[in-house]
Amino acid sequence: MLVECVPNFSEGRDPARVAALEAAIASVSGAKVLHRTSDADHHRSVITFAGEAEAVLESAVRATARAAELIDLNHHRGVHPRLGALDVLPFVPLGETTLADCVALAHRAGERIWRELHIPVYFYEAAALHTDRQLLEKVRQGEFENQSKLPDLGGPKLHPTAGAVIVGARPILIAYNINLATQDLQLAKKIARLIRTSSGGLPCVKALGLPLESRGQVQVSMNLTDFNVTPPHVVFAEVTRLAAEAGVTVAASELIGLIPRKAVELGFANALKLPDFSSARIIENNL
Image (cartoon, rainbow, N blue to C red; front, side, top):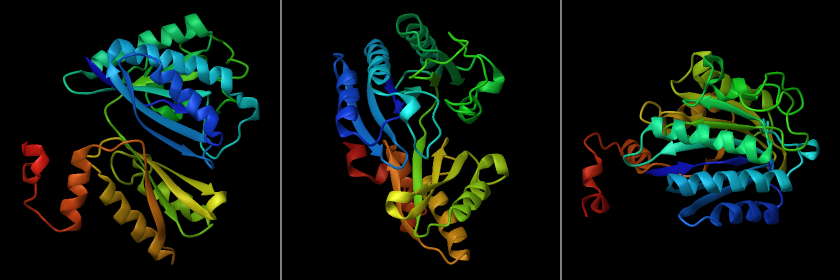
C-alpha cells in the first residue's frame, strides 16, 4: 500500500533544523524523501515523502517527535497560519491505495502522536471526526496563541511548545503561490478573496494574501484541491488579469512540494493551444 505524506513544519529559516527533520523522516527504512521546500517569510517547510504505509506511519511519528524537540511556537513568527510545530500531517493515497486506507492510517498516526508524544491531535479532511472540522482553515482558526476548540485526541490544552498536530487524509492537491511585484498587501488579499471558492471564486481553490517582506513583494498563496477542476494555469491567468487591472505585474510563481504530471500536461496544452493534446502524446508515457 503506497502512501505519500506531506508534513508542514513551522520552521523555514534554520537549514540545520530542517535537515534534522528530514533526517528523522529518512531514518525509517522504506520511507523515501522526495522533495523539500522552505520559506523564510512563511517560516515553514514542507517535506514530501512516500513509501509503504507502515514505513510512512513510523516516519510521520518520528518527524513529529523531532519537530517537538526543535521548535518552540512561543518564539515562532511567520506569515503563514500555524497551530503546531508539525502543523499539518496529511496522508495521500498513491497507486491502488484508497482514501479510506489513508483515513485509517491518519487515525493510527494521531493515536500514536498523543499516546507516545503527548501532543494533542485534530483530524481534518476525510479523516475528520466532526463535519465542522473537515476544512483545515476551520481547525487552525485562532492558531497556537488563541485556539479554543478542544482537540480530538488529548488536551484539553495544547502542548506548551509544540501546540497540536492536525492530521488528515486527502487526495493530491497542488500548493501553488503567485508573487506580485508590489508591496500592496490589500491587493493580494483582494485577489485571494476574488479567486477562492469560499467567496464565490474559482472552484477547488483556497487562497490567502500574504506579505513577503524579504522580497519586497506580496503573495497570493493557494491550495488547489482538485487540479482537474482548476489547474495552475487557469489560476495563473486569472491572478495575472486581476493584478493587471490594478496596474501590477506578476513577479513569479512557485510550487510548494510536488505536482502531478497531468497538471503539467494540462498547462502545456493550454500554453501551446493544443486542443487535441493528451498524455498519450508523451514519449515517456508510452514506454
